[in-house]
Image (tube, rainbow, N blue to C red):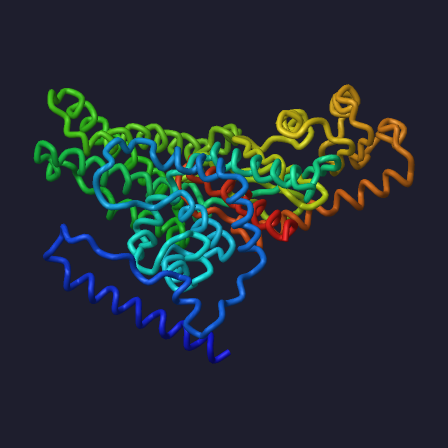
Length: 478
């Protein structure tokens, strides 16, 4: 009510006062400053503490009982930092809380900065004071959140679920599996657009590299002609589409030749500046990618058999992405994600595949990863995509008591050694994984991952799953 509104106003006023004091003391850089106002003081201004949401209390309990979760994050934060001097950086606890808030709210870094500095519950959970506002600046958040490796987020998920098992809040006796797609942050591609983008990217990086020997002016600008041809084909402004496409391909060949000349000249240089090494590597990989795009465009123009789907380039920024079609839905440019969840909805195993693998081909890999961490489950359920003779025999060899894979074709319940009642029970249980996937997509940003690059994409997806497990378990514990 009004008291909450008043506390927020007082908090903002104090925040501005602290900023003014810091500005006035800037000339005296070596003066030791006192601690800023504590959160306990801010929360007790109206004589009573605010009500803390239950899931925050649950997260605090998990982090208190399982300090190894923060140790995993701290080891990644310390990677590559040998010098202990300088300003105090973001702690592992603050980083994890920031990630939980971002994934739970599905917000931008700018919005996240505002939330972390204005919400007292988040500040208490992160164990920071209002004066530590530099920890949650937009640039600091962006730099720190992507430092955590994908494998670390998997270990955090495993540690969270094992803690839930120790506390008797969950179990892995009954599990269910399914697959879904996660889209990348890229527009819908076509070969004409990829050709134009390739010419533009090649030229920009070639000019940047040629600036080492003042050779920018020697590189011919093909971007304007390429854009003109691209727009004509895209908006069908010309009847001779194939002729315009050939012109675009010729421009791409010319740009590749210029880029290769720049690469050859750079290799001959004795002294190479460190800041241009990344540009050089990007230019080399771009040359290969644009050549692939030219090949797939020419193949399509000739009306011949299309090249292999796995060898196609769909995006320069996300070359690992593939078109995935599930059921009768529209194709999604992204990656396929396989999940195993338990009765409480916690994700015990998550696997991102490089190709559009069949569900049946991934069952053994999924179950092996689950068994390695949590042992052999008592019951396993899955849809009809996972059933095959080899998979049924594999699960029987593992001594899984109830195999609840959906039957199709010539398969019957006798193949699974399951009764009618058990089969109906397992299929109703299996349907729960659809709700888990829907929750992940709606509330934790798993519908589309905006993090760029293959490694960052995997980290973004697995961090969403880790945060989902932490919040889910925190609600089970309280």
